[in-house]
Image (spheres, rainbow, N blue to C red):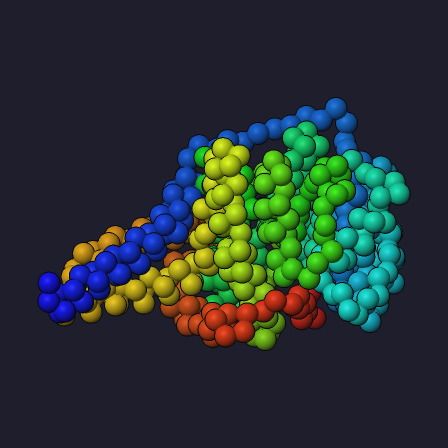
Length: 406
C-alpha cells in the first residue's frame, strides 16, 4: 500500500470515528426530546400526613430580592415546617430582611470556604439537633410556585428518593435576542429532557434548586465543598447509592436570567464549565457502576450527562461537518460527511420538536433565528474552558431592576 493510500485510509478512519463518537450525544438528545412527546407517566402520592419539612435557603448578599422569595415560601409552609436562611458571608442586610419575614436566620462567616455547598452543610448541621422528615433546598433568587413545596416534599417522603421540581428561567425585563435563546436552551435542558427520561421510566439529574430529600438520605452526605455544580454531583452520588432523583413536572421553581452582560456570562461560565468538568469526571464511573450493579438507570444518567450544552454540541457538529465536507471535496471520502448530515438533521429535529411542544407559546419562531448569534456569544466561554476552566464558586451579580418583587 502506498503512503498516499495509507494516508487516505487513516483520514477516512479518523473522520468516521469522530463522526460516530459525536452521534452518541446527538442521538441521546434526539431520543430524549421525542420521548417527551410520549403519554405522561404522571404519578400521584398520598402520604399519611404532610411530612415535617425544613426549607434551607443559602443566601449570599441577597438583600435586593430575598424578601419576595421568602414571603412566597412562608405562604406555603405549615406550623410543622421550618424556613431556615443561611446568611453566608453576607456584608449587606440579607439577615435582617430575612428575619423580618418570619424565617429562621443563621449566619455563617468563613472567608476561606465560600460556596453554596458550604452554606448548605452549615444549615444541615443546624437541623441535625431536631431533624425534619424532609429537607428542601431553594436558591435565594428563585420563586417556588404556589403548591410546589408540598408536592416535592410529599413525593420525597412517599418514595424515599430525591425529588427535583421543574426549574425554568424567565427572561429579564429588557431582554436581548440571546436571552430568548438562553431561555429555550434552559427549557430543553430542565424540562424537555427530564420529561423524556421520565416518560421512558428513567431518573433525572438534579438542577440546583427546588430539590427535596428525605432527611435520612442526606444526613451522611458531604455537602461542604466548593464544587461549582454541587447539585449535579449530589444527584450522581445518590444515584450510585441506589437513590436516583425523580422529576416532578407538577412542581415548579423559577429564576431570572441576569440583565447585565457580565453577570450573564459569569452565570453561564459557572454552569457550563461545571457541566463539562462533571461530564469528563463522572460519565466513566457511572458507566462502570451501571455494569457492576447491573442497573440500566445509571447507564441512562451517564448517557444523559454525556450530552454537552446544546450550543457546544452545535459548534462541534459544525466544525466536524466542515472537515468531512472538505475531505469529500478533496476526493478522500464522503461517508463521514453523510453521517454528519444525518446527525445535523437529528439535532435540528430535536430542537424543533422541543420548541414546538413546550416553547412555542412563549418563545416565537424568531427565537430560533437568533441561535447562531447565541452560539457565537458563547465561543469565548468554551475557549476559556480549554485554557483555564473555572473551578471556584462565583456568585452571579444581582440587578436591582431585575430582582424579584413582593
